[in-house]
Image 1 (cartoon, rainbow, N blue to C red):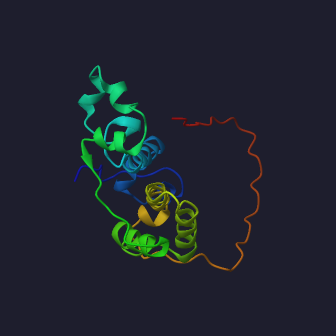
Image 2: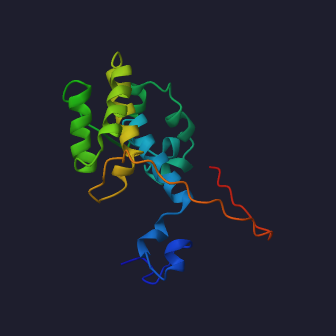
Image 3: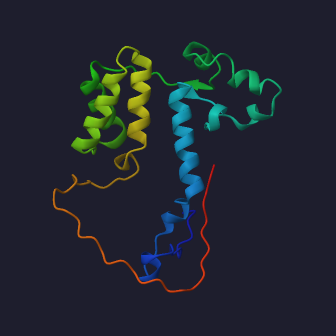
Length: 180
């Protein structure tokens, strides 16, 4: 195990004395870099170091790296420069494709609202099948169900009770904003 077994995240979990070793990986820069890598995988239709992808790092240090990444931007050119390719083919219409991606990427955990959003995005781009598939893949990997392994629950129709606003403490604080 490569996690610190005693890692306590800050906030409520740490204050409650709970540990969460896997939360060591859940920092904002790591989450953003993971999403950038996944989006690059779909945009480039394969594994590449271009666009902050997960491809071979050594390619970034070669003289042809800019040419490799900026060679026209069309799918055939992007595919030709990947280290390996995605060969997934959409099985049919929007609903069938999203249902298949749901099974493959989340184990069938997408809730109905998320499914409808992704099907709508796919349908809106149906004139360009490659763009429609990419939109579905990107939206699905950005969903909460892609990043979790639990069963998940559908959003409740019960309105959330707004907690009372805390009184200002008057003490100074620092805020950290991460931009990548």
